[in-house]
Amino acid sequence: MTIRLLLADDQELIRTALAALLDLEDDFTVVAQVGRGDQVVAAAERERPDVALLDVEMPGLDGLAAAAVLTQRVPGCRVVILTTFGRAGYLRRAMEAGAVGFVVKDAPAEALADAIRRVARGERVVDPALAAATLAAGASPLTARERDVLNASRSGASVAEVARRLFLSEGTVRNYLSAAIAKTGARNRMEALRIADDRGWL
Image (tube, rainbow, N blue to C red; front, side):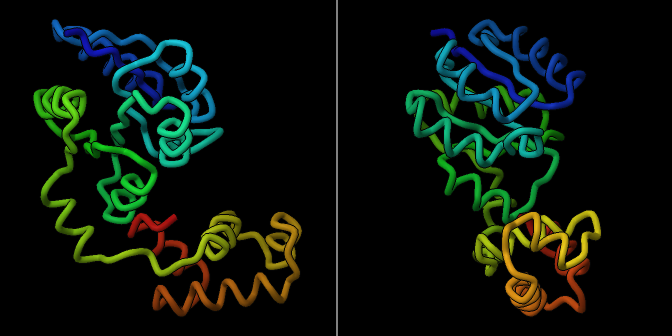
């Protein structure tokens, strides 16, 4: 059986190199490549891949959000998150989004090929060390709105700018920021952002 693959990564060099590598396998064929998360579902609906390999950080829609939409719209396509960032929070969010595999990009090529075959057979594939770290870390304590406010603060935006961007009052933004700072044990919002990023909560 030939396993049809969709690759989604915004770095063209990595995406094309990965496609060339996977095409060397007798039982794989890359049927679609996209560079944006918001192109994933349309490509999957058109090409009907068996497995989609999605990067986490992409323009338009991140890989975790794309995975959630893809599993709803093309349920026959199994999702593997392929990322540079082996963060416990990312793994938890990937599984919640419907992904059945999570592989870091520095894994050996044979390990990736094996993961694809296992996922195509209906198995779940997760690096054991990352799975253990995810269990130890627990769930993200941040609410969706607290995550939104932290993300909107990335560029050093003022409270007023964040409030305008998210259509919230300044007082509400301050409350969300205070809650996020307390939950991450940070001293300020930029430290809270860094901690949340490091743990894969954003």
